[in-house]
Length: 386
Image 1: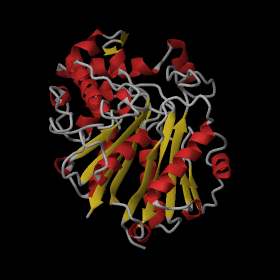
Image 2: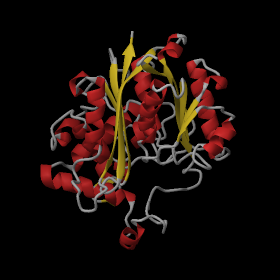
Image 3: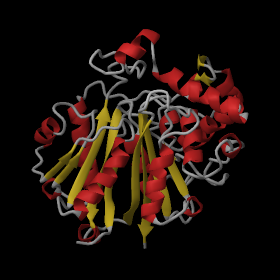
Image 4: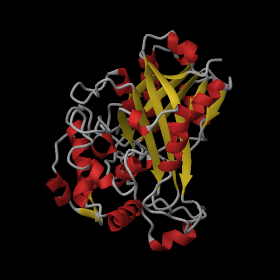
């Protein structure tokens, strides 16, 4: 069996508010969309991948709901980075002959359910709960603490972080489905309410319903389809901060996932034309850019400033769909959207105003969990084959 594995289908649900749909229905609709995009039928799917956003017992309930008959199933959950990691799992399952065509779905409706990301440690069975719940450990302060530390060590400023939101808004204005399509300025970001110092409201991602799906297949299947050939060059994943006080707040697990991905792909950051990276908060983007190797540690603030992430303007176009900061962060898990926009860019199907010229090598990067504590990261390097 060929070592060449391809992403052959990708679909993002257009809704950002699904008051009349169940989570299972959203998973079904994105699966149908990805199948139609690829030109495949449900019977072609023999591998299925999901994470904790899928309702029911791991993959079992959603497999029954979708009516899929598969030879391989995977429900790995490392937070919002799960779909990116699952691209690698699907690649390896196909290489090992476990399946030929793998479907990955992710969907949810926290906006309809008024579900804020907020507190991640309220369940008493979590082993960390007894140590963290009394101190009200919550999501925004977790990322804010990392931002404060980066500012302390390297002189990073709130203005520099604000440029990340500005770039996302420049891209979102061209996305008809973006939840926040309006342009914003650095001054407007800094004037928005402070959520957890130094992060303002516009430094934080949206809460939205929706989801997406991608299909990964062996080379022979990809060749039979009338779609651009998007090859999986390399995927790495890692888990960070699992050893108590052994913490470096300015470096994430992305560093280790990126090292594995670049090694497998046999490319360097200088070869990358486009980046879709997790943007739960602006600091998430800054740390990822450093940990992916696009600049030295501590130089991220300078790198992201002055429009350097805006397509057609800056050195590294980032999140040209508007990302989680402006477009979509379904189920509090944005990993699937990072893969989808990366595929769009490599196919040349992004909006013309943000399409990166000669985009042949790109990264989808995910991160999920608490940045100052336990979190998962995954990096996928994808390539367009002529």
